[in-house]
Image 1 (spheres, rainbow, N blue to C red):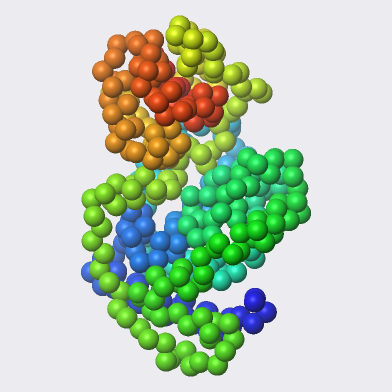
Image 2: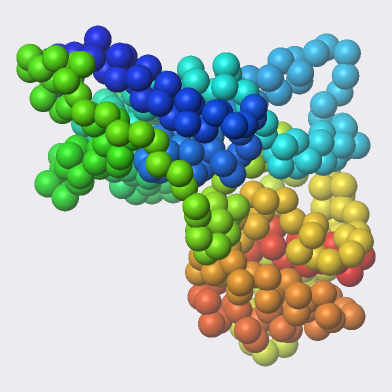
Length: 362
């Protein structure tokens, strides 16, 4: 398939698509924000690939910053200050057209490859991962993959961190061979591109059709419903503390221990555990617990602990805020959430959530 691809058509299409979108959006605005990027085009995969590239560029800038030989970025105080800075910055994405247009062109081409040749795309993605950290790379980036993501999502935490690059490549190939009949067709996926500019698969695959004959349509205005706006806020990848490797202890002690009721989390055990984790710079939370969470934490807790229900997360945090002791908070969480929602109390998500609750009562 890839040998027949008309690269010239693909490049021209991406340029024309980007120009149409930018002409429409920037006709009355100078900048675009992160939430506006998520809603920029009718093609969700294009939008998320733009965010993915912005995050990669941020990582590159952070790498340059941390490469300075004059400062200790492993120091807890520096880590906390940089984390706070990143949390603030993540809410201030602001991109001009001159910088967005090229990123949008690349996002369009990547989306088309995911739709038409997902095997090659995801195998190339694995090559971007740091040596020995493919599993971590997939975890961090899975939120960006909206098309044919099952080819790699199933590998996370299953392939094992001991596998090398070649074995991961073979695992993606095996997934493709077993799932290819159930994958969405390129036509089905790329129809959302056609809402802006018709994409001709025949010409893309090397058949002779004049590019200028491709039917165009103007970029529609998007008025997101309130429910979708909330989802956007949850989904939008934020440039937060995940980007900074915090100082870690050599081994994490299990957080589970028999509680007074015989199941769930034990307050005394958690208090003893978190009190010893000074490497996190454990400080008390002032104000409401909900306001202390970084957006990436809210996204993670919503998806992994609260069945994707952001209202349920807000209710849980509000309920904890109304209590006066950590012990009461643990009891409430055991009664309402641990069993009812089937929490894995040894998971990293539960550990991090309970650590935030613990900080509320310091």
